[in-house]
Length: 418
Image 1 (cartoon, helix red, strand yellow):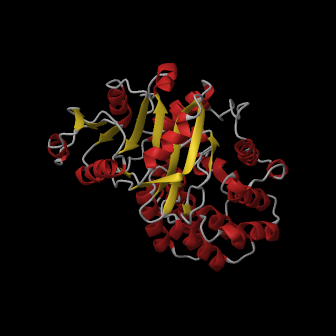
Image 2 (cartoon, rainbow, N blue to C red; image 1 turned 30 degrees about the horizontal axis):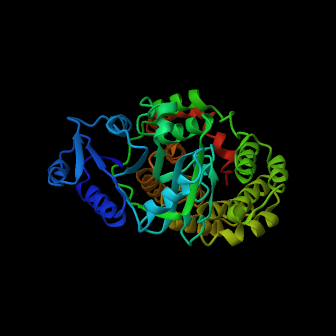
Image 3 (tube, rainbow, N blue to C red; image 1 turned 120 degrees about the horizontal axis):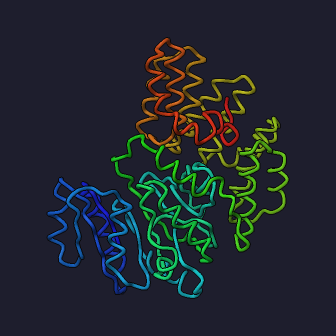
């Protein structure tokens, strides 16, 4: 097992103690690399006699540190997790049993949930960030607990040694952003099966040390490698994942009718919520408001994405108050859901509540700094209020991302405007 930590003594202590409690009976070695901490993390780690502890003199980033750890082990199976991860009873039993019966399986992952009860990751497809994980931005009501082949997985990830021998280590050019997704996609292209076991959940405490808004370089490298994920779906892609991936692709390219026809080809119980959500998205773009509302309403009790789309539909019917209520509920379900902040800011502006809009945008940037759409909303607010110099400053930061993503409005097909 490999864990990288930096200035997170209480979190890594919880992580290590949870592994100790819930991994008894398994012959494992826990390797922890301290990435240049200055808060007492190194001192605590030195006192733990059952750990293999490495250290860097300075913070080299999670990706480089992880690769250093991986070079120190020749174990047949390796578990990678973050220092803010807390495993739960029988986690390792289930991940192992999912993998050991099929030698084509190279990676096994599980559900990641927040302490507040929100699903952060489940099974995934190669798609834009907000649609990559099927259970993202959902309140955890026990859904996404199926077991299946997947294109991408997260949580605590079990990796077969042969995967690393075949495709190499994590791409260090992707500095702490997208390196795990890149690794998973390379494994799939190399012929390995990825398996998702939703009966296993780990708690992701998500540390407050969020990255600064410096994603342009990483996004540039990532886009050069993967573009629009044209290599996918693969011949052995799960049939449901194939439908979901193609539907997202059709919607993103401005062809929602094609996406709707695609979704009607297949529906299976384990992924019914994803099918309904994508149907609601396609129907929203087609202007079929009552049909979209009917499809999305059953999902509203747990899905922030459904609440967002219901807010868009309400605004198009002229009810800003109802739209604001839906968007507010979406943020209650998922406080780090960037598109909802941007849309709610727009509603406040239409009501003439500019100060309230600015406060909300600033909260959104703090909670989800990597969502450029929230900064775009703040730039629009400054521009409307005559603060052009502030708007210009934000737009200069956004310019590299917008040129790569196709411009600030390119996300409009996946998250339609009010």
